[in-house]
Length: 101
Length: 376
Image (cartoon, each protein chain N blue to C red):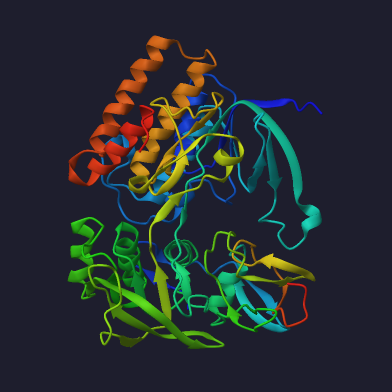
């Protein structure tokens, strides 16, 4: 959920909206915001499943340290979505069992 | 391989301590470079939307994000070069730093990242702190997040990661983030604190309570429940005086975000691999590099400042950064002893004020012991 109106920060600026693709589905994003922020704003919190036990994982540290939020971006596996800025047309894929991430 | 010196002083970390260190060393005429892993300089200040306490020198009455912008501008005005998206990922004992450029901007295309080695006459480690995690059943579920992560999402990116929140920890971070979640429109169901007292300032706790959020001391989270889409509920439990769960006091509440504010510890990865001697202090958050009152570590070319030298408030970090900057400049002969010690005295006086009062007493004591080389 996006915070449109904020008592300190004022009204949000959505003039820089772009489209990214999550598993081929279009999702709106603010240009430059972390990919994970766009996914959470779109209601997607589970970013991947662990390889062996298939446990869901999401964003934990949001500073690129814990690597819980890694996904495949534009064909590169293991990208930290919490610190990677969203850019137009980005293709984000949820890692599945058997993937290298 | 010889690596040319890129600067007199390399500051690692562009938060409150790093930026003030750069202001002082730049002002003294040292060629200064700040290396920051983030996209915008300012470190944790960039997500502080509340007004600061303290005195005018530390930006009291202003919001953290505005202070960050001012400090960065002042550092540049004093000749410092601020490099963002530059992560110092390794260092050796000769002081050579290994820097990864573009790890954020080009995270999706590793071939565009650039590895670089740099060397400076002095290094100031202003690497800040890391959050402590706590492990409980279900803590890996999406929807369990560190308080810093929640603050980043809510205050910088304006994304609310949950609507119904359990806050774990009633220190200053837990209380402030609770209030910021309320400002952003979330429903914070309650704050639990394992200790029998609230750790944060009374003024913050009062604000949270006035907003209708209960603070349950001697309580913790026992389990996060949920499904493949993340957290759906949390079980709380009361703790006895030995911090053991009291059977029969479990209570399950409907939440979709569990925010962990269990304290911070100094980030010592670089000081440790650079060979600085470490010491443990519970009052300062854990292991930290031994340092003297000029903030020099046991390696004479390496200084430390801010949370990396013991966890305190951002206001103290701003003063420690100045101290480290002045000391590094003096050791390079850019400030004479009289001017440097005069400046240090003034900074130390302000630090003593910040560490005054009963809340600062344990920090004052621990710093005093470390800086006089006494074992704790």
